[in-house]
Amino acid sequence: MSKAIKINPKFDDLDNPETYINHFQELKQDAEKQKENKGLFKVKPVNQWIEQAKKRPIPKMLFGELWFENELCILFADTNLGKSILGVQIGRSISTGVRISGFKLEAEKQKVLYFDFELSDKQLENRYSVNFKQHYIFNDGFYRAEIDPDIDIPENQSFENFLNQSLEQSIIKTGAKILIIDNLTYLKNETEKAKDALPLMKHLKALKSKYGLSILALAHTPKRDLSKPISRNDLAGSKMLINFVDSCFSIGESFQDKNLRYIKQIKARNTEIIFDAENVAVCRVHKPHNFLEFEFIDYGTEREHLKQLTENDKENRILEALELKSKGLSNVQIANQFNVSEGAVRKWIKKHSDNELLK
Image (cartoon, rainbow, N blue to C red; front, side):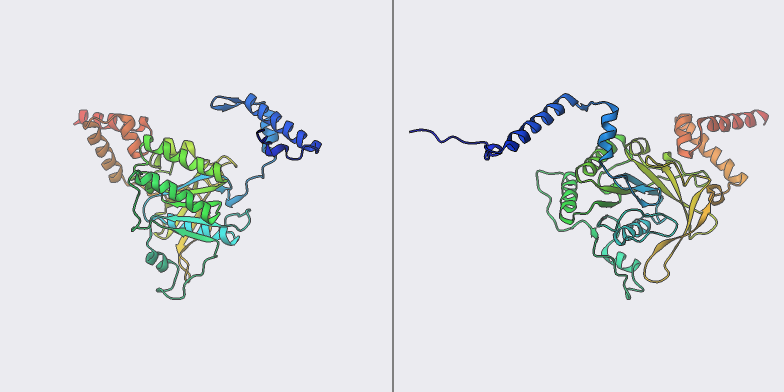
């Protein structure tokens, strides 16, 4: 009894010359890929990389020059400065296709998925209503996700792995390409530690590449000296997190008015730094009706909004530094705590020593 011959599906239509041509083209492409791959790397001439890039669309602005399409971006600020307020406002802007005053929006209206690990649904309702009445109506393409407290985590999975898996499932279900995470603390236990920050950023970058996402992740700052300009050192886990993101910006507190905030650009790859210390975007947090938001006022300098130190403040800071020195901290460690240079700490210590000798 003769055996039935199985024909490769690619060759079902043997009389069609295109069948052979297509197959040989695939073999040729596979061979080229094998030549490109060098273990972990893909290696090819720079011109080929540029030709490949030409086929992809130019990234468009999502929130002015601060966040572009296909970027992994971090927005960081101290507690109660309005990260979540601005995050929701950006999500509303993208989901409706209407720009926020003072900031450009080039991208088309599209779905947004907001992972909210901060507010309860009742707190959310309060922000976007008038005394729990006259509620603001969001676009149907703006999705919000929160953790289900009643869900059982599989025994063979850690909370973090189950969270990451659930996050990916939500992306697939909604089809959203814009992701806002409020905030990073819930994706990893301790983002300020390099060993925890590295896998976190790798996971977010992998999701970005896999699904063609634009990700805005909100993050906290540790306690900082409010008389000093905001820098990348103010972000918890800054060395690792800043290195992995495409862009980063921050919200600063103004000492002119408790309702004033300023937005400063910390890192950019798709543009030059526009909102630097000499050109911060000054905004007011207010609620004109049923939507709590940042209202753009004007541009200004960061120094106009920084806390001005009195002589007493300066003396107290030096005393704090000396106390830390007595506990064994190095000048560099002390400098990082006060967001100053190591040279400044040396001057403080020398000044104190000189004063002691004069007594």
